[in-house]
Length: 234
Length: 234
Image (cartoon, rainbow over all chains, first blue to last red):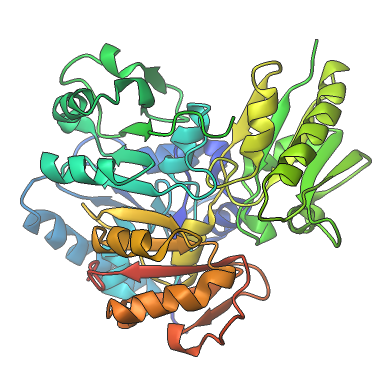
């Protein structure tokens, strides 16, 4: 009997935004893997820390954050082989995934390397998308709204045409692209329809008017929501 | 002291996909409201039924499902007034919301009627969007994918242009629009990139090839996911 790989969506940051289902699996598996930067602590592990009980084997997966994708892909190759050893021995393995594993999550790289050989179960989680909307007290999408999710690294011309074609827009992974994206939103005269939030539901969550965000200061976990229809729910 | 209105995201259907945060609030509030059809039981209430303990006041909000929006808006007016009476008396009120309250959720109609007068706290939930992706074992969006969410009632020409402009597409509220949407996907030669799912994570969840879905048989809670890049995570 081989083990099962669990991709656990642990939600956007508040430890209580984990689901009962993910919590039960987290507390019953003896091998726990999680992504982490090459240096420093793992955000994913810190989110579930209040829920960890008993002993377990921990496997930090250190992923280089480089523009060249090769080093990261190599790191996933190595991590997948390590996880497979545990699965082969019949041990279940939980992998922590911030937000939802299949919503712009790095879990898919492990999924792609393991799912054809071993059983994989993915537990959906609360994504940053809806966490940001609730933190901003602004419904994300209503009725027949078209909602488009755009990663900020896309070219400005693509961002522009997709924002034009949507009613509701979430721009993710803003980080170092913030200044360029804000300039675009100004040019499109949408500043009064846009909201900025970083680290939603974490203790250091911050909500700012777009005009008040300092240049070059947005972290990777920041998002801009645009509601072109305004407050359509009223 | 007035009470607080809680909009609780209870997730897509599996009772264990509720968050710890929503569960704690659910179990501590003494007034519980939930949407229901004019006849029959409330799906939202049935999802949380395993978690209900003790006594509480229950307020079913019966919403007419008509094309004309006026009867539903009138029903929300009446419901909001009833909820305000409890808030005015200092009682906290939980409103159950399938999926996430701010992701195409009807909670926004209560929010719009109450949030300016009384404290409202919204708890995000696992949305059907990611629940469907995990049930289908197919990552929703990766890296710099553009993800577009389209309500099926939109005109065919709009659906076509938005599908053309996205990498990953979720078509929601398919229901009685299924045949028209399937014909469009056939015309766009995307049948082999599309997946169909209904009632994700509920006991009667069903996954079918698009070609195998009987005509005029899709329920309201059905979704089509299209991954134009194919399995980009491999």
